[in-house]
Image (cartoon, rainbow, N blue to C red; front, side, top):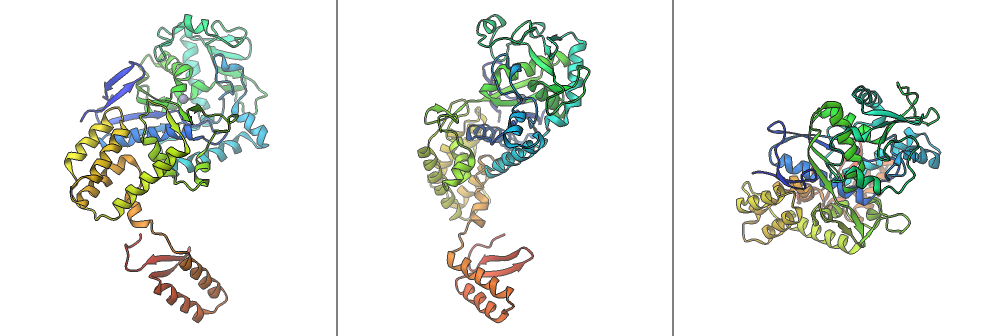
Length: 465
Ligand SMILES: [Zn+2]
């Protein structure tokens, strides 16, 4: 079945056709690892994950690359942003750590969250600081072709007036852009939107030697350099948040296509903002949440994943505690249903077709969820329903299969007895310890001693892994 995707470049839904028949080159703009990713960021990565899973569900082999920005992302993400300070440096000073320590810490935190949200790990996760050489090569290629100049003696910049179709992704033209400038342009820039490829700054905490002096690369450069290194000059899909369209993705196109002469990205997929109670999330408004905040209130991270599926990615996801509560309830209900059913070999073709239609129609996950519930409520045999639902879960990512096997709550009483037995064993009171084992067994739990400590297995129940 054909997949339709909305392409920001053409501003319409198109039939997806990768460059190579069954292979998809997939790139996501990854996190800047200077702070915890908020739930708006995570909504974006959940959508990317759904898209990758949907492609794989359709039989495509996907190679997914997601960068880690650990240098060069400036604090003022506005227009002539080259005057801001590097977010990594700001964080390093704030936390009295090295930029590398900051990057490692928040990269780990980011992937802990993606794991909790059951987001499949990308195949390649390149770090900007490990690809300075590739970025320098890209600047050299642009310099050779006459796309660059010095703005003052600090900024080596890209001349957007040299690139014929600048603005083709965002639909902005140069004149409009100039009229909308709000910031004082960097002295020496011909156009305020000419952007830094290299910033000469030997005092920057992280700096590298280059033909343009010691300094560091401009932020936009890394995505072009790293995506092309791992996926080749033309990508099939590039995702990002809608705020990345301009200037970040526009600049990625300008520098990549100028360097290679080839079309950089075939399908641009942009995810809309996440709102909280209808407002933009911000620290000052006190409506800024990270995944841990949800977990601290006893929500399952997958309830947030469920919530992400209730809204189409080209609409704003409006986060409220009430909507999360509903998502949690729906997810629990789905789990309970599935856990109580035996798995059959055959699913329900009628619903499998509807599900596929939904995900292939520009990733219509709200529709796909409706299909899930229609199936649950249908009169088909439970075993067939379950077979289909477990198949759908390859895309949904609710860990429905694991749920049926593992999620059995161990009663407090049993846990206390296990602790008691451990104490006795430590004291060498083997006979008494064995008595406790019998007590545990009476409560229908079997204890097994492993290298990692005692493990519990319910007796007369579903076997655990
Ligand atoms: Zn990017």
